[in-house]
Image 1 (cartoon, helix red, strand yellow):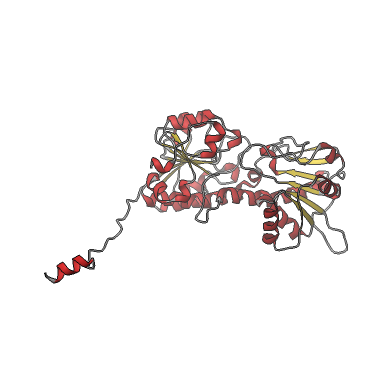
Image 2 (cartoon, helix red, strand yellow):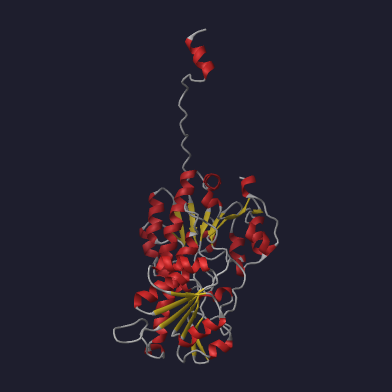
Length: 398
């Protein structure tokens, strides 16, 4: 028996090194339509992101004035190498459509078979018909609400919540001041004066960042939530002394009577948030106090809340100013667009490097979690339960 036979029988014969085969780079044709949804001022890709994608070998089609509401001009996109088109039909010829709001029925009709879509889903405003139309055209759809990062977090939801939390305090400061017929208070505190009282209902990301902003200005803050875990996490994250309480009506009413500002930021996965502040409680609040109901897109935490718009954002009821505009992030659309673009751009580059969407879904669990329609099937359990549509496990069909 020769030496090679002996080594082979022992399983220690050297073998050829197995090298990874480089995946084929896929050039992408990306379409960025102008948002047509009410009060939507954001855009999914900024000029700088478009420039990065084009430098990486991809093509980007942008609809005329798509970035206007976020103060990005056509010329800025042209300077970065994008093609500006004046028809939605031209934009929807792209292989991948990237937008903020989910496509309307008219926009879905412009889409071609096997196209790829990256956008929000907006579960609370959708119908079963929306998903059926996408599946009929075999659209592969990624939802912002479901895409996770490498740390198993939801980056789109997180960043928009951060913006909403910070912006809500800036809005409150505006309506406390004289310039908007407020009672002339400065949000925060200065030496020798009692600070303004801020009540935050909800200890999620919105509540956390509203709390941080308030404390940074010197206000006195109390946070309410029924989750002790969330309250404890908020206290750890703000790195400051902040009062917390569960949502006990008597304690809440006592805080509301003293409040100058109330940020209502309860959030649930889908459905309507609980109405925790009754009309009778609002009657007990101070004249000229300000309510920012961030939860209005899920029904609102205040019984007195009514949906308003960015053009007419407030109304007064029982001498309490109510700000109930859904999509607060659209008020600071340029900042929000930059934040969204920073998340989308690496996703698009990953799709190209992996050789296409199919390979990306196979090899990237975080992005796979964001897929909700694939190969004419609904692949998200939450949507399946919500709209009574048969669910297919994505792992079985990729």
